[in-house]
Length: 332
Image (cartoon, rainbow, N blue to C red; front, side, top):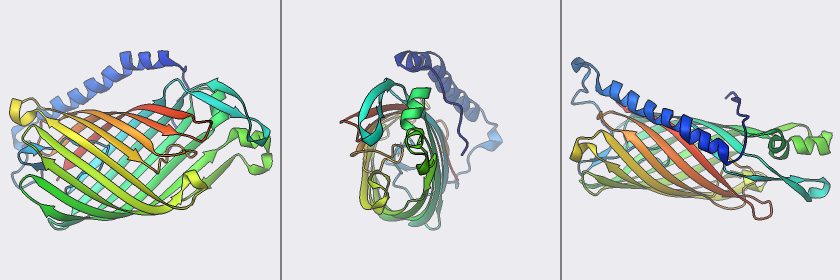
């Protein structure tokens, strides 16, 4: 994945500029794509036998990039996102690891993801996913203090339907991931050139997960996901360790009841394996607010807004990130 130019002014003013200019354009883009999809010719209508977006009890679940869904189906999902830390004081360390100063500067992230699920039978399928991330500081001081990093991961796995009723779905999955992380540490290189400017690590980990979905009615649905795995942990010098992730999402789809092709989702997630920050010191916590176009039975486009807090091992500092991800989901 290539590193995008990400330097900009730091501080709260940049986020006011983002909400006043970039965010409305993203939202208008989501609406425009939805309108164009809705205005397709009559002969392009979805065939009755074609797979559709997951649903239970007449509720079509609003897709997000937050947690995996509980359904064994054939679908393609794409996501592209941007996030930034909020008014961050970045510590600078001198020889011996002593903190000597702090500088104001944002940490910026560009993320991308691709996922393909294929149902071999109605009870079993396989999944392949690819994710990429690039991190940089928002100014020269923060780049010097925190360096640069780029990461990519590729995972293969299987998913199984365990129990299904008219209202609910329970499934499980297993997956193996290989991740490649390149770290550019400018401060360490200046202090000791023998360390080199960059290093690359390739942690491998395997996980098992369970997912659950429940359709309350045509308007509301609930989803949950929990996973546990074992692998090389970036926050512990890449030694083998156990990790886990738990999340839940409430889905609100207005299409069935009010004939409005919009859906909304709210969610929360905690993760003991935050790859976005290699010096994390504890679980990351994240919240989700999402809006989606739901006018077609086989296609959805969503705009996810997430806020994440990651504790790091710098004098009890906790980083806060606000991010936006545009996601596309197509079932076939």
